[in-house]
Amino acid sequence: MDEKDLRKIVDAVKDNIKSPSFNMGSSSTYKTDNITLNTAKLLAEAVEKEAAKVGVKAVIAITNSGANPILIHATDDSFIASYDVALQKAYTSVALKMPTSALKSMAQPNQPLYGIQFTNDCRIVVFGGGDPLKIGDAVVGGLGVSGGTEELDTYLSAFGADYFKNNLA
Image 1 (cartoon, helix red, strand yellow):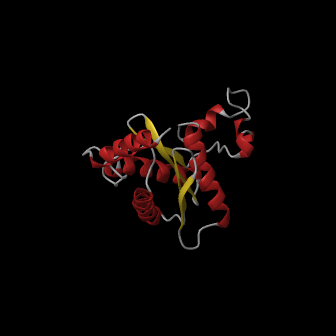
Image 2 (cartoon, helix red, strand yellow):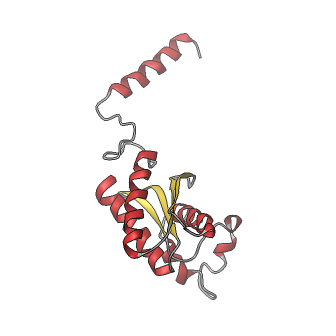
Image 3 (tube, helix red, strand yellow):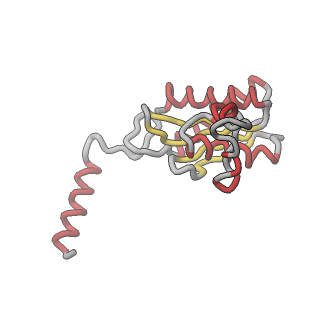
């Protein structure tokens, strides 16, 4: 590759940045395949408010589309154990592109995914509280919530996924 080829590449990148469709990942419009930190903060704030309404001291974990942590938000006096559980719920929801609550029945003895929780270095969570964050059919991140009962964690992660879809995507 010579200097002329490099100039073409640099010019193409500059033209793309100037394009009206280029977006650095604002919270209102996506032109990327990953949730942004700013959006993760807004989502965590919304889930925290809802958790307070239902009386849950929650840990809220948000990952990108590669299941890597973007933000982990622990409310005051949340359980220490909830940190890892929330993170693994977010991981699972991205890794399998489905809510963790959907795995529960499939991971029971004599069911098709029995034992899946022992794969991926035991990071797969087979109970509710994790939801993929989607734009259309594309998974751009994952949300994991831990700190309440399974039913409350499931409610809060579904609330967060809906909030993301309707307000942030």
